[in-house]
Image (cartoon, rainbow, N blue to C red; front, side, top):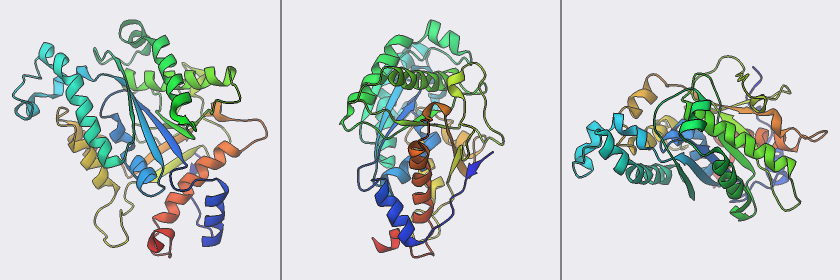
Length: 321
């Protein structure tokens, strides 16, 4: 794959590029779209760095109400007034409220600014997205709501980047469905573009470690751009500070996971089945603008900035703050 591993330029070049793209202070605006109130942990390192290193604003859309998580809730029941959350009827009644609060707690660690809840049903695990759309979600409503968030969620400024869950035949159907609907929304905005609508550049975050370019043949919107680079990596082993060699972004991921008490297996899965050193992000063909590389340059520079900031032994920007 054409993974993007930034080469460090001179400090002057870095600052020039930084200013050129206008990504300073809170200017960079990112919208994250997830399916369940704990999926943000898949991208926790990148989100935290966007907010706390690049000073971006990050807002989040959560499609489902998370009620299907009752299967994992038995260990936490004593923390929530001894509600028998692992009992399906009780869990479905109370988990939407509880899981929103858990997401707020995780989001406080990551630095998420605003939340948009679409409250779609979380009835069952199914990899078949057609069943998800037929039996659980209101597809038309989700696209309408997401379009409205893209247009007005960051006031009149719009979003520069939208981070979605990379569709995969191996993923939870809700994960894939949320990504597909986000891409359909982008396509709809492109076809009906008016001068006052800012369409974000969309990238997909992988749930699993991928050693080859992802494909999802069921929908052409998921096509990854063939022009390199088309993959970008965030290193979770980067240190959080130049003053210590111990805490890294794996710590942030664990902190975020620990806030989702109702999902008892989340930390164990993150540290075992889904353990990884890098978060992988892929650039979609849908972003391509003929004879214009502005969008891909934006993504390249974001990851280049993060690489510079975390090179603590090269006299970088962080040391000068």
